[in-house]
Length: 175
Image 1: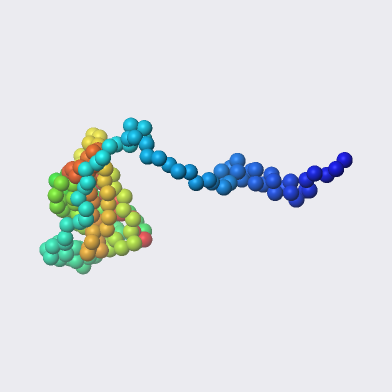
Image 2: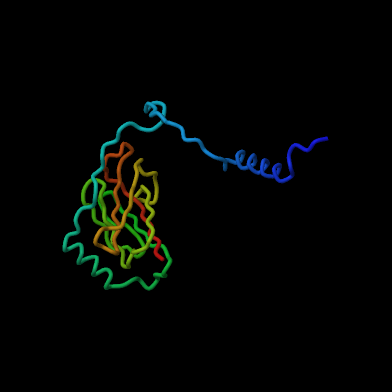
């Protein structure tokens, strides 16, 4: 009886077959065509939200520097989480290590903390300002506040993507 496949060739063949079945095989590039919106399940064109952050005023810069000079609260531990709950009007309702909140315009807010947030991580969600109730639908984005090392810029929009005032909960984790 003749031997058709050597032992090494069989091992390579079965290895390639296993990788292909597991999804680790070669992928062929395919040309894609754009599908109509009705087929993709995605919403139609959204209004463009305002781009960028408002400029930091000298008074805001002084406030942020004063918060840094005051230092952190005695309960602050490096690697801990600071938070703020802010109303849709831009009022800081409660928080830990948060100093102030400011509303700039529809859906644009700044939150100042009493310690540097450089290299920190930010997480926010639309949340009700009270201790009850479900918040209105919407989305929230967070970014470092330009020119303010202890500030976070928050932007909220409604479900269509239009800037809209929403209360939110913001958590900041610092290393």
